[in-house]
Amino acid sequence: MKPLGALLCLALLFTSPVSLAAERMNLLLITVDDMNCDSVGVFGCKLEGITPNIDQLASEGMAFDHGFVNIAICQPTRAVWMTGRYPHRNGALGFDPIHADVPTLPEALREAGYCNALIGKAKHVIPTRAAAFDFIIDQGELGRGRSESHYVEAVGKAISEAQQAEKPWFIMANLHDPHRPFAGSRQEKSRPRPAVTRTIKPKEVTVPGFLPDLPLVRREIAEYYTSVHRADDIVGAILRQLDEEGQADKTVVLFMSDHGMPLPFAKTNCYYQSNHTPWIVRWPGVTTPGSRDKTHFVSGVDLAPTLLEAAGLENLPDSDGRSIAALLRGEQQPERNCVFTMINTTAGKNNYPMRAVQDERYLYVWNGWADGETRFRNESQSGRTMRAMVAAAENDPAVAERVKHFLYRTTEELYDLQSDPDCLVNLIAEPNDQYSPRASAMSKRLWHWMRETNDPQRELFEQQVKLALD
Image 1 (spheres, one colour):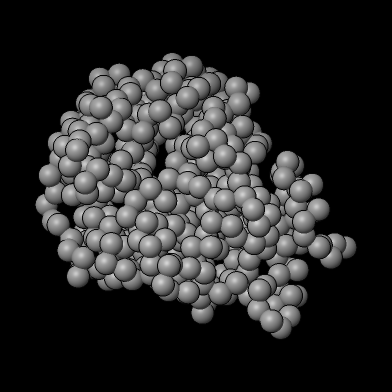
Image 2 (cartoon, helix red, strand yellow):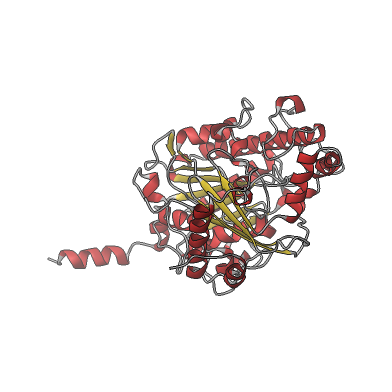
């Protein structure tokens, strides 16, 4: 009679890698482009029925009140997702490739036997890692990244190919809404895109508090929300396809946005509205339906570690992030009490070094580029909103001050998010110094993080900010 250990070894020897891999959970990562967290119903949007499908997903999984991305620009934030490393640690400071020696999520999954599919935003995900995906389809074949039927077809095809290969699958489905051009805008009408099922009217919307309530601003916000609703339609269609394929109970679904809306004081900045993103995870058998985490901070560096743990795999070597699986099980991680965010280089190849740290109450921002003369430029200034603000500034001192601040900034900013979530009052600029201890403590915390992650901007930060270091 053979010993038990020998029998186990023989069993493992004759178990194929494919059958072992087939027992793993499937992974579905759904991302939207340029969607504010508070544009989603479950995260507080006042427009009734704006995101019914995303809200339904939240009712079936866990939603995070403190979900963030680490950099509010499309390509570098996806590089963070794929590597679990901050931009200055993975090489993709802006629209740059990930360094060749940095391991990635799709490569680790493929090596473990997964069939990987990339649907949408391909140029922003794989400037260096195309070989890690078995199936790639970009926006040109997806109705410019906004066609419900095309996404359903692509997801169905990806699942079918994985099943034929008898492999578990990882699908990254990247929706292009609500990125500009917005639904119904002049820009979109010049390049026809799929129709919308609901058109939001200007009178329906609430203009975000960080923007002035001007007629053209309200009009652009309405077009943005129409695009938000179209994105939700696609999310719902993808999830229904998952059900029809009989894969829902075998699939971990993670939903999030790459950053905030493409308007001033949101995208390509370090404000609360820049990096705060909807985070929703549905993990059958793990997450409690309708649960909500109101305490822990999770961010983009945690995405790859979480999906790898869901797949039964180790974290990537030298990762800055860690899995949130414990939180999904209802456990505590008390050290998750803040988030670090940044900007390096914009799509226009302009360098605007910014770093920020945020805890549950305060946000501290350092603008290394702000010298009183350098003028900020980014994509969020290309729509109606910035033009309307500049025009209104001629007669409205308050708007004029907001425009000036957006364009030139100041080296340090501190905001009380409890009383001022729109980041309108820079406490460091207040006449008394009651907030100096808070600013000092947060700048010190940011410095320690910069040192720990070998941030190349640390020397400039030290030159510009008076630090009380122990």
